[in-house]
Length: 632
Image (tube, rainbow, N blue to C red; front, side, top):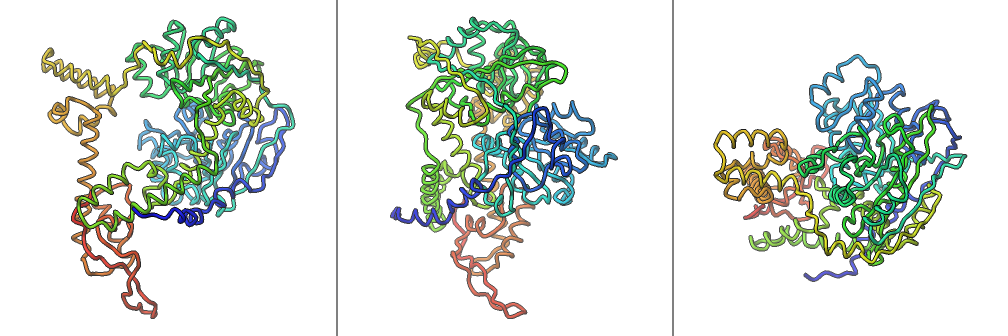
């Protein structure tokens, strides 16, 4: 593969680094707010509500932005990052529809048919398409779209790709806004194209909160000592690892008076591993309360639910769970902001962050990320061109496998091949956070830069038995995954120890309790599942391969029936014909056009002359040279 790396300059020009910087250079308009005031009480919001085409940096959590939109006289769709937020808002506001995984189509239709002048709809990013489909094209003109806690669009996209789905419709709305107390300004050039402005709420009072940073070389032992030195009525631990939460609870003997708040799948796993007080919603606070990242932002924890001066402890363990790094500039601020002030009862928060650091943690600067992405893009594009021009089955298979397994694919929007700016922003953000955890000095600098905290640093006792040694000598067995539990249960059921009736009863229970885990077995059938030893990972892989082959075969057959080698087709004709085929075959995730057709046919890069239209203008189209012999 002979590639000149001097062509990297062309790649830089193609993606335009100035585009990525341009939002950061946009002038910011400051709006001042006094202590005790909410947005609905100050100008310009009390006259206009949230303005359209803005990225609103509200600085303060709990300043009433979402509450104002829920009461403002206009129909609204509010996108919230997680389900607990939606459930909490529905409890506080009547005539609000919350849409998430469990919401039925009938409930959506019933709400839309109700006689409510200004409909208010709160939805997760993954379920946004449901309300869009239910309302239709009029949603773009009639509804105000608010992306609440907008930084999650960037922070979550690396492990939750569908979180950016609403962004494919966001700019179609006549009225729209991005909002958060801790926004990360996106590099998506459409914000600039639509003349978005940045508003920043600037408090005229001291709003920073005291926080104590405890740097440790053994998280468990430091936490054990902390609990001895700080006896309190209730503790709230924010730690994004159910595996390590379970380890802490076991080692510190906290089971008798603890509660865990996490996702539904994590709840099932923890309960099957013997943990009882595990919830997907905030309720029944115990003395020791552990909350995962789905409760980091937007969720309100009101005084009536905790009724104490809360002790907030953020935990980061780089040795056992590097993904538990908490960003001082966004997540830490959001976590502390979960506890809402009460008009009748004054309460104070104690805030701590117990963490280890790692000087060997590698990170890239913003410019290094740009260079890395551009280099990946150059190589990927070159390999993709080889795939399109390869003429033998072996060559196409080998190159296709290279493309499919290439990590850079995460930075490409599958529907049209464009750059996924949110993945780029995510990488820049993650690298920035990693840099903060390289030393206690850099972590303190990151907290200082957030301008949200009054810092106090407490060095923890240096333990001879460190986290790294603890990792090497870890004796406690990790939690069994749901997949492992279900797989082992099915294997046991078919071991010959049970009657057919007992097997059917247990399988029915598994279907009810674990529908998503059982879905692959249902699809492939118990007989074929047995051949794979009920290994759900192998079963899923076989299904994915089968579906891919089926989709490719069906579309290839359609293309051969509707396109002829040696003939030319205009881009509009190609798009129209492929649209019909995709719809007839019930395929998803495919964008009709020349790019898709090239995966099945050899087509020159340039269009050819086809004649003139009725106005005398040239008609140009693409020549189909031949069908590829093998397509996967």
